[in-house]
Image 1: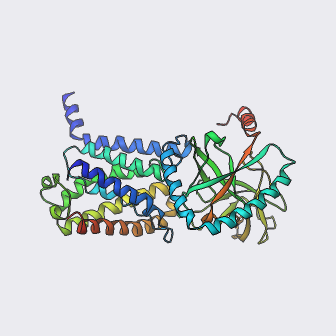
Image 2 (image 1 turned 90 degrees about the horizontal axis):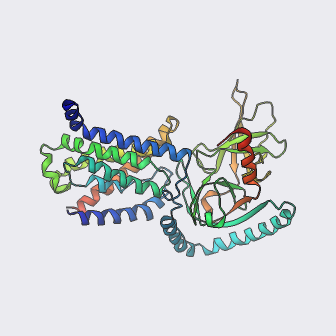
Image 3 (image 1 turned 180 degrees about the horizontal axis):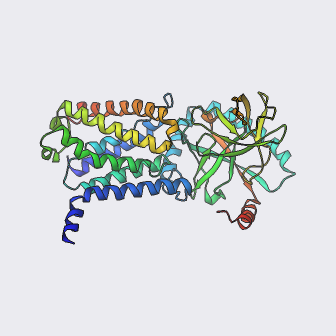
Length: 164
Length: 263
């Protein structure tokens, strides 16, 4: 998947995120961040520092839309840092992911594990940084599980239907 | 030296990671303490404009309710006019809410007026029912308001009946209620008592309605009440709000700064 396609995908997903997903108001705990999918599906390169900077930029854009400067940036950098290690645990030869991270290149089991681990880490980081206290930990945990689950379903659905 | 270089190179990913995270945390702290950058918020021209267009489309489907709200507001404004002829330092400016969140721990609303219209950081915001919040970040044509239903907000309030001052905060759970702290247990607090702004800061004039006491708890051994206040403003249906401009605000704040050396 070339760069232009990735950028187009990012823009489309961000529009969906801001216009649709951010407007959802279900039970006060449902704030999925589907934009993180674009980071998860980026091809694996040897330029890990660049990948982290890209993560920071994606986080910055999301932060501007939610008045939370720093929160998404921190979470996205963390995800981009962990990504190669998580993939390294799940597949033997990480080098074949330099074309794309998808259902075909990873296989269903690894893709699901990879998505679940990183989406939950990302959402937990975002909600913890936003709450910035332990007194709401129960709420943060519930928020992470509900929102994370929806994001995970979205990522898996996208991979099954579009990114085959 | 060469070895050091090798080690740095070997762990460059980790070092860059730490550096980037430190930058993110600095941004997080700095922005919470002094939110000066309006470009990196929903007061940003492009982003606020986009939310405004979304509102325009949505408005079409709620014209009826908006009409009745405007009628109410007209009545309220006429009342205010009568009252205001006494106090010329304070003026109200009706603004539109273009974006609003109500289901987070840190909620914000964006209004369609900014620096060009005389909006300044720290001005009070109300609607026809009562206090809404305080202006936090000001862009050229849009501003972000910190409402009562944001955990950072701390509002100085008093009882209407006996002038006792406490601080109103929101605990992040229910947008209909906030908590009043610092009320000592020897005071008689009744359910239904009205809470109004204290007038101790130039942000709000004295006596603006904030809420009514919904319930109060006094734990054994505690010398302070835990008071739950039902807020007057309905944050779910915020459409038009008013920014309160106090002509003396700059002067008052300058005085305080020179007096106490506060930032």
